[in-house]
Image 1: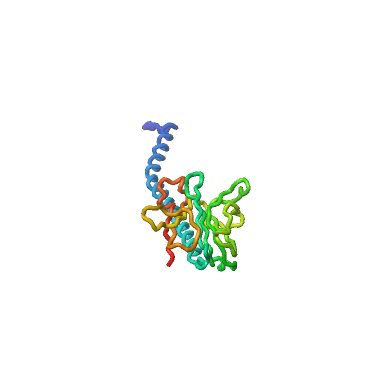
Image 2: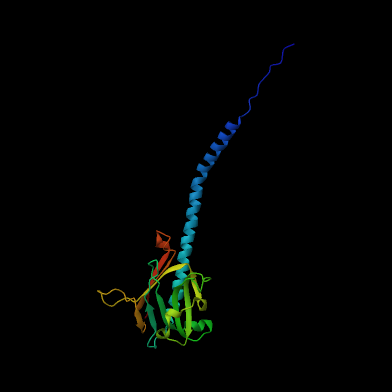
Length: 212
């Protein structure tokens, strides 16, 4: 009788299994890294273009109020120059307009300004707001008493709002303070998330609105 041959089977040790798992994880991570980066870039691009779209709609909203200005009034438009604590422009734009009639309200002054929550308005969402003062001209508005609870939030997250009247002189800067009849044009810049974004090309929009 031929004796049976004994064969020994050696199993994997715990260390070998851990090494195999670690190597598999590393290879999987290297394979997925380009995909993760690509997805992150797509998400960032979508967010940036979303900001551009929101800023563009806001600019069009402001332009609509300006184009509906009541040109016969002696005080049609006013700009108050102001700078926020962070150094960004925080101007106040006022225009006497017929635009409130779209909301079934009498014609009056429309005011645009940035508002933030504070001691008295802690639940206010920071952003660009729009006030309507029926029957009043810009010279009648007390800008120190603007209450964001009485306004309409146009776009949240706006931390830069600039309004300037282009100067007729080559040697003068744009007029940052203005009150009077409708000028030939107005320069407006809106910024959103500018403080936290080094490349703000997708977070800021500017436009010169001219009046025929």
